[in-house]
Image (cartoon, rainbow, N blue to C red; front, top):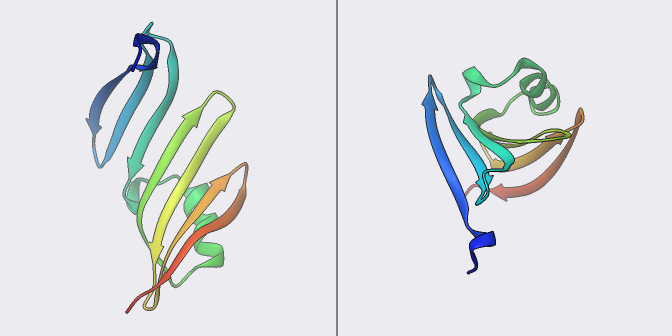
Length: 101
């Protein structure tokens, strides 16, 4: 792996979420990666997920903060199914669904 491919990671713990800042070797900011529990998730993202899956619990949400806006990967569960949805630009798409045994 060359020097240009190396990435420095700075890890911060703030309240009940985790933030990871990703920079290139030259120090240029690439993106932030944040992990939230449901209670710290922004209301717009939580409301969008709960509007369609109101019987689901949000287990964890991962947010990628890019120059052009955030993208959220939200892990949810209900009594029968685990699912992951992507929320970006006020739109939501299911990317994974697994039936619980």
